[in-house]
Image 1 (cartoon, rainbow, N blue to C red):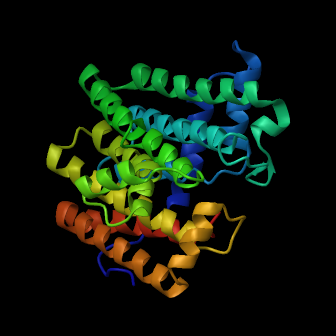
Image 2: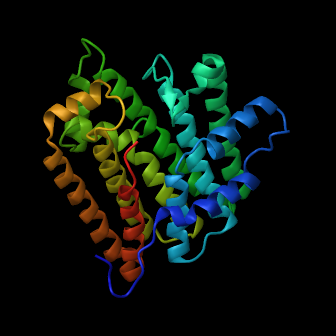
Length: 300
């Protein structure tokens, strides 16, 4: 239900602005290496991606103050890192996927070596974009640190490794369980997706806060919201009936009913609403509506 004092907003409201900024910030298709730049632009702007993460970054900044050039650059850095992770995730040594967004994956169309080069190019372009467009050295360093945390051993890299290892026959889970208990995660699934999926949502919210130079308490609040949003997003996707199951999602569907899933997702969403209202008052409720809009889309 809409709050009487504000109009809810949808992440798609910011999609055109994000795309327009991307056409200016991303490498030119006529610059060297031409083929890699063309593939990067194709994946980022032309393949039907929803641009959820950069739209969230721009939306949060717009609600709180304004989206600057620095905000857009950080938003696109998040999206390029996401793109890089998808290319790697699709490889035969990982998920061995054949389709992404309804068309053949990069490695299917152009080979594994080209896919690896494209993934590395996306990652390096993201790093260069942060350095080039940060509003100050301090802001750039703060976002670099947030990026390293999101990608590291307790971020995307650790989560992808755990995801693969959980599906490996005969894998020794004792070290994963020991770390899970040390960190206080209730399940390995929760730990895996906290690292793998929530990390980039957390980075997308921090991108807005760091570009606005928010104080540490409010940055921490945005980070917690990103974690909650990412976990809810992954839980909804893993237990949906859309797309092909992998071993991990098939196992999860056997452990949780659709009703339990819906309840868990609602709990996580309520937690981020409470967090945002406490940190940002009415503006927080608008940001919460932005987060909620992600769940109005069909799972992919």
